[in-house]
Length: 139
Image 1 (tube, rainbow, N blue to C red):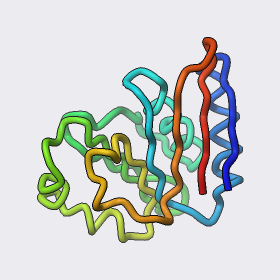
Image 2: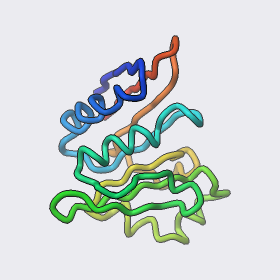
Image 3: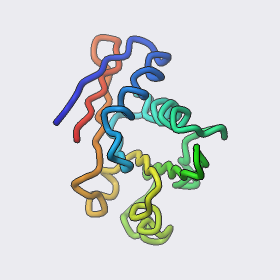
Image 4: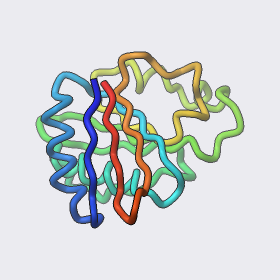
C-alpha cells in the first residue's frame, strides 16, 4: 500500500506529517530515504511535534541517535546512520534495544544498515520533483 504527498514549501510538511501519522496509526518504525537536504529531518521534526515532543528535534548526525519524550511517556528514537561505516556500529550502540522496543523509531539513511531493517517498517521516500517535495509512503 502506498500514498504520495507533495509539499510545495517546507511548511506543508506539518499537515502532511499529521496525515502520515493518521494513515500509519498501527506502525511505529519508519525508515526515511532521500538525498541530503530533501527534508527528512524537517519531516521527522513535524512528526515528533504531532506526537507531543516539546524538546528541540535535531539531526543526530554525530551522536547517531537522539531520544525524545512525547505524550503519555511515549519515547521517540531518531537515528541518522549517514556517518557509520558498517552495520557493526549499529550493533555497538545497541540498536536492538531501540528497534525492538515499543517506542517510535525514525531512521534516516537505512541503506547503511540493510540487514537490520525489518519488512514491516514504514518506508518514506523523499525527493524533489519540479520544485516540490515528493513524499512516497509505503506500508
